[in-house]
Amino acid sequence: MRKKYYLFLFLLIVVLGIFLRFYRMNDLAVFSADQASDSQKVLDMLRGKFTLLGPITSVGGFYNGPIVYYLMYPFYFFFKGDPIAGTVFQSTLSILTIPLLYLIGKKLKNEKAGVLAGFLFAISPLIIDYARATFNAYPAIFFSTLIIYLFLLVIEHYNGLMALSLGVMIGWIVQMHYFALVFLLLVFLYPLFFKKNRLPFSYYIFISLGFLLGIAPFLLFELRHQFLNTQLFLKYLTIKKPEKINPIYNTLYIWPYVTGWLLFGKQFIPGLIGFGAMALSTIILFIKKRVTRLSVFIVLFILVFLTGFVYGRIMHDHYLISFHTSLILLFAFMIVYLFKEKNILIIISCLILVIINFSSWNLTKEKHPLQSGLNMKDFKTAALIINRDKREGYNVAMHAQGDNRAMPLRYMLSLIGEQPLDYEHYGEAQCLYFILPKKEKVEEQTMWEYKSFGSSEIINKWEITKDYLMYKLVK
Image 1 (cartoon, rainbow, N blue to C red):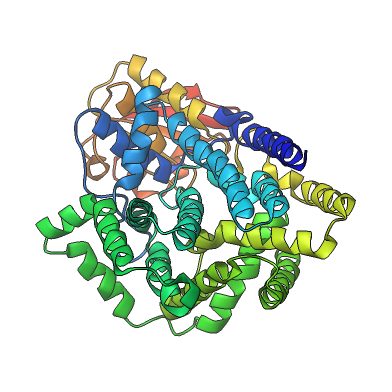
Image 2: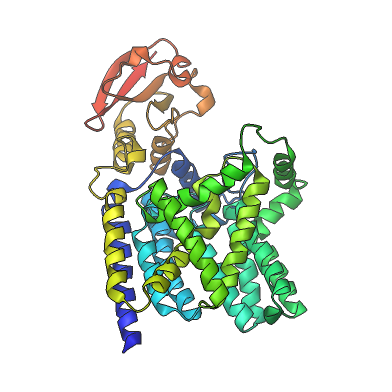
C-alpha cells in the first residue's frame, strides 16, 4: 500500500514538473545570443556540417566538447530547426531528472526523501529557468544525477558494463562544464578511501575506457590540433588570479547563493539559513548512519568545494551544476529527518516553499525577463518581414538583450534560407534592418554596428512588438 502511495505522489510531481516547464513555453522560452549560436551549430549539422567542437567558454578562450549539439540533434530534426526544440530538449531532461531523484532516494533506503526531492526539483525556480533556456552547462543537471545513481549501483553490485556506462556519462558531462571533472575524481578516489567499497582493478579499466569513449569527439579534435584546447585550459588555470577576489569568501558565498536560488525563491538569506541547516543535518545523519551511502555526497561536496577554492576566480551558479540535485537531495533528507513520520509537517513545509517560489516561476509574465521584450515569435516575425521585403546586400542589427549583432534574428533568417552579411561587413551592406526600442531614436545610436554602416536614411519601418520597431536603412 505504501509503495502505491509513493508512486501516486511521484506521478503527481511529474505532472506538476511538466506543467511548470511546458506552460506557455513559446512565450517564456529564453532565446538570446547564446541560444541562437548553439541552434545555428545544430542547424548546420542538420544540413550536413558536423563538428568536433562545442561552444566557446565564457572565460579562457577554449572550447567545450560537442556532445550537447549531438544530444540536441534529434529534437531539432523533429522540429525542423525551430529553436523551440532546444527548450523542449532541456525541459525533457529536466523532467527525466525527477524519476532519477526518486530512484536515488529509494536506493538510499529513504523513498519518502526521494519523493520529496522530486517535488523540490519540480518547483525549483532556478531549475525551471534552466529548463527554459538551452545552454551548454544545463544538461549536466540530468547527467550529474544519472552519474550519481549509476555510481551508487556500481559500488553496491559491481558490473563491468555499468562501470563502462558510468565512464561514458562522465566523458559526456565534462564536455558540458569543466567543473564536472569532479566526477572523475569521485569515481576514482571514493572506492580507495572506503574499504567496504573496494572495487576490482577492472573497474578502473572500464571507467577509463568509458570516459575515453564519451569524450571521443572532443579528443579527436585535440589529437588533430596538437591539444590546442588542453593547452589553453592549462594556461588559463596557471595564469595569475585576480588579486581582489578572496577565494575563501568567493567559494563559501556561492553555496548559500545557489541554495537560495534552488529552494527559496532566489533569496540569499533563506538560502544561507537553509544551507547551514542542511550542512548540519548532513553531518548528524552521517554520524548516526541514518542515510545509506551519504558519504558519496559528502565526498562529492568536498571535491566540488576544493575545486572552486583552487579555481580562485568568480564563481557562478552553473559552476556548481554538478551538485545542484545533491543539494536538493540533502535538503529532502533533512526535512524527512527533522519531521520524521509527521507527514502533515512535511506537507506544510512543501506548501510554504510553493508560496515562496511561486513568483519566481514567472508564469504570469508576458515574456521571460531575460528577453528584454523580444521572444522567438518576434524574431520569426522580423525574419519573415525581411524575407518578403525587396533589398540588395543587407545586414541586421539590434539594440536589445546586449546583442547588437542580432544573433536570434540571424538564426531565424538562416532557418528560412536567408543570409545577411557577416558581422565584419556592416560597412559593405547596402541595407540595414535595425531593431530598436520605440523610445529610442535611430540617429542617436552610437553602437559600432550602426556607425560602421555609414550615413543612411530610413525608408521603411515595421512594428515588431508594442515596444520595438524594425527600421530599414539604406545608404
